[in-house]
Length: 305
Image (tube, rainbow, N blue to C red):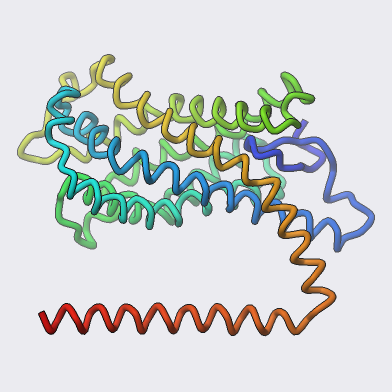
């Protein structure tokens, strides 16, 4: 089902129509760009939802995953000020990771590889590029110091986790779509399939995440292999993360069709009005300059204090 080409339904990767075989190359290219931007927007919406949920749950999950503390003890360790600060970290890192994965996922569909190899390549590329962000976020959630030396910590188990996740996203998505193509083409179908696909991929890749947690244990409190890997703790830490990811990207899926429509309208307008490109570039530059000035002003005021 994946050989001919693909059309993105927001549930991962769905093969319905051979876009590459279109008679109009320009239309094919526009459709591809629209799907990439649509996937990135899905990731962006998911990033906001996940960041809001993760600001509270991620410190809990990390404490349970790495320190292996009971749930109530992890809840008691939560601090409102820490949650507020960590929300800033989760928003910043999610806005990089979520759109990047979803956009790369679509781009990889155009690569002539078997589904398993494509998923493995996706996981490897994603992990190698974003692991410093992942480890930075992890250490912030645990109130641990961040140094250049620990940004690629636990690379082996993390890349294993992301490869399994990439393969599972490919396989489960295609399976669910082929199960009921009519349902998959509806908005409800896209949302349900995305949720089920992401949860399944998270659960299937969870052993790699557990191994990562084992490698990230603080040296002074490191547990033995037998003590660390316990089924009850594994299920507890896995279920929370999987549900957050599933909900976040399922909600993000709702935005994808609207964004793709907007991209099409904008492309048509820009083609008729080339001067608009210049106006957009000037607007972006103005925003960057304004942000720098604001940052310098805040920094200057803090120094005066």
